[in-house]
Length: 282
Image 1 (tube, rainbow, N blue to C red):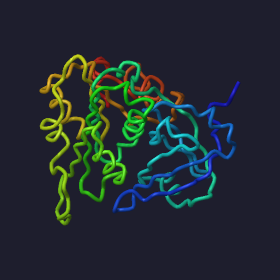
Image 2 (cartoon, helix red, strand yellow):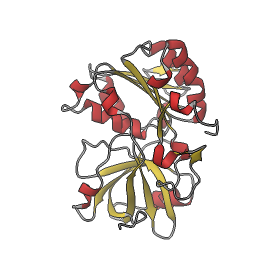
Image 3 (cartoon, helix red, strand yellow):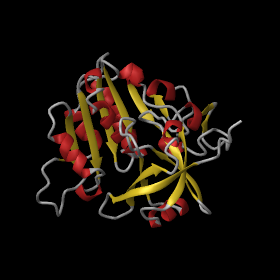
Image 4 (spheres, rainbow, N blue to C red):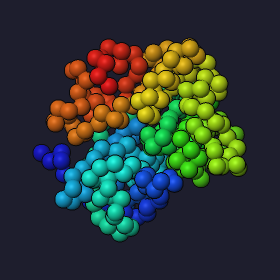
């Protein structure tokens, strides 16, 4: 029986500082043993445990797309022991990843539908994976209209700025980028305002063929949900990721449960209809 805690060795191939406060970096890993890429087959929405020797491991959403081959990518916010140690690592260093873990956004349901992506802050990682996957030439025709509402506190706190600009220039995806404040950025040309307000102004109305995927800070989700209700989205058409509740990834530590459900095993992706059957502990 394979040890579920055994990580796959990976080497840091590229480090990108994403935000102006330098607290969020994207790490691109390549597999030390190339055959491990076949063991790490994932779908957009899943996560993995990143492990640093002597420090521990942390659950992080996968930022790369399954359509991007030869590497796997994570964006890590510097907030604790493991993430701080990872931020000190450099290209060429070796560490571990364990996974892929959890469920994923229900792509089999979303095919042939309009998809509205709503994200905020550094919780945009699995949404970046989803967008890249849907825009891949092999997949784009599987989905109808794609809307993206993505916000951060300031222009300098947005992730993946070059990709956001590239997506903005395309005619097969409708981007609605926003910041809470653009003070000090006179060249800012996108929206200013909180994600819920921009969602209400820009997102399409709900109907049986339109689904919303929401991932972001709890306060953003709290105020976006009523907006989606107002726009007419059915509870089973609102899909959320409880990434802030991910723990060991396999439900063994018993710290991710909400009622009888384990976020690491049964989630982290749930519809609002499912969440409404659980205790309000998230």
